[in-house]
Length: 436
Picture 1 (tube, rainbow, N blue to C red):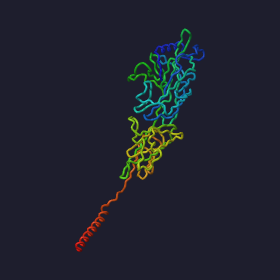
Picture 2: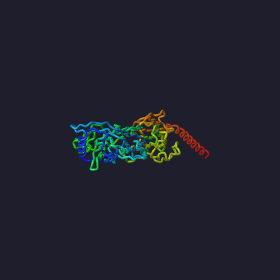
Picture 3: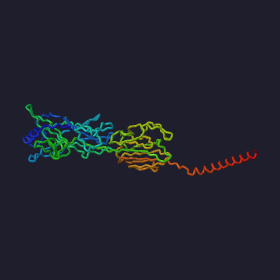
Picture 4: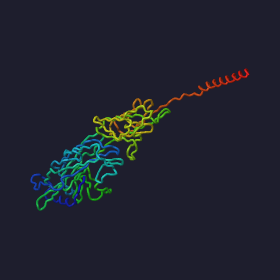
């Protein structure tokens, strides 16, 4: 949340206000103008972290804002009073068609940001090398809220939502404190919203020593902590969720003296139990990114005389870069591999079911897998609920038995012919000598 903190003078003014007027706040009898100065809005962010090479999923979340619990002041300990929030602020998200009902729709195709390009103001939790994130920003609007007295007004922002393969933030609540100060002048008594602070806990605010603190006791501004960490790092910018996905890689090896290294084998991938509109990236070749899983196959396979299963879509089978789940939660596609080739399908959501089947024809198939159940014919693998990156290595053997003893079968015949020919020549010569 992009919060512009004022200098510490207002803290002292606020303390004086508490001393003069006491800690009790009552809506009745307030002589302040109902028009509140300062910014009427603040923002917080929502981050969805995922692996590089993974497409943003379709997911929805609901955010609500409600008054937080009041906390009393303690002048001796330097603790400021916290008041329960008043009125009904609204939450609106930045996505298309957003309404002030707090509902966030994350959609396939939303932009993603790589770790290397992370914004300085993006407080994304648990973002590791090889990951990216999608970002949305919510606006909290206090235009319809009337504050009657200076004070720190507390609200609780809560996230809710259950989506396939998405792990929600470990803390579904954020504390939003609204700092309302006395801004009276010669024209009358006025109030002004001075600042907003979003943080993670409801610990008592501390702020009478000239520094500004979050209610969890961590300094928001004013140098570094004992470990040398910038105090701004203690701010909570919003909520961070993680999208858990896995990659599938399948390969082909041909063995045997009758096995064709030129032959294209048909593979059929069927994905089920997926969220409609989910998009998977298909890798046929190395994209040069060390963080992504890559294939190594012909983008446009060429039919050879050894290829029997040559479907009409053979030329386009490997030509796709993505697969999209239909309204029924499934998608099926045919691929073609020959000896030494492999294809990768990225971003299969956790708990998705998929089946990969090969047309082995008159080859003897076998397969080794990272996870999944191998079919009885050793030409298929079923993964009931994806839980890991999966490598499926298919091997087809076609071995011909070459008969032995060919020379023994042929030589005797040749010998007989040779002896017979020699006899005919001998007797023919003797006959000629006798006639002469």
